[in-house]
Length: 295
Image (cartoon, rainbow, N blue to C red; front, side):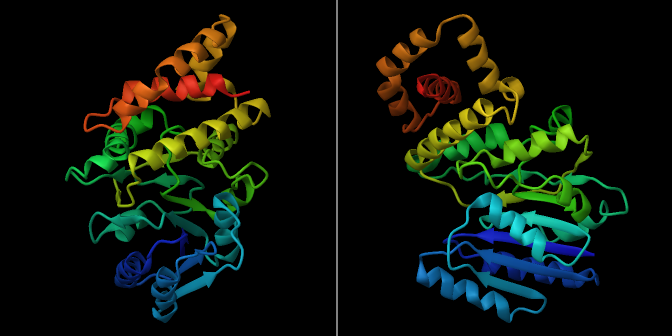
């Protein structure tokens, strides 16, 4: 029936595995929970995660070498024994006790993807984590209707179910650099195969907020990843808003001007992003300038 698949790296996923096992057990279904640890370096976290193997119907696998986000998700799917695969990120937690029950309503014989969504706590985090929290609440924690308007672009790979047969045709691309845009490529490949994405309200809470410094760094890495995808014709440049703006700038011959402005203002923009009132408009402009500056 259901394989619950969780990749982790230096994160204590025991509470999540325990909660999911309790929920799945309550539904009297055939299920398994597989956690694969991508060669975590924090031994205290590894020790906690090893206890997952003591939970009924749970498997914990510790890799000896880090293989990255795409490969580990594909490996989880290969290990799975059931038709439906439910992928959850390690730093999430169900909003309520009905996550599995709610998903089961939609896991039938139809070949599709089911995306439950994400939420962020209403509690304002410390200043050093504000940017990630604001971005998550404004750009990721979307209700069902706006997600349905852009079904592929609004798919985040931290809480979704997919049939094993679809995943065998559209898996995560292992040939691209490990630069954080594998989910965008995955959603584009689903769209190319005309795979139905069913958006439902069944969110998890994203707990692992990065500091603003780290989030900016990850965003820069993701922008490098995006440029790799468009340079290698893996996705069209206008698939996301950032790419559409970048393409327009290139076609109008303004790339040099944008790079000049970026170099002139990037420190002041970054100061805003690290402040107690980070602007997502400035964040978008920063990423666009950074993209234009890449060779």
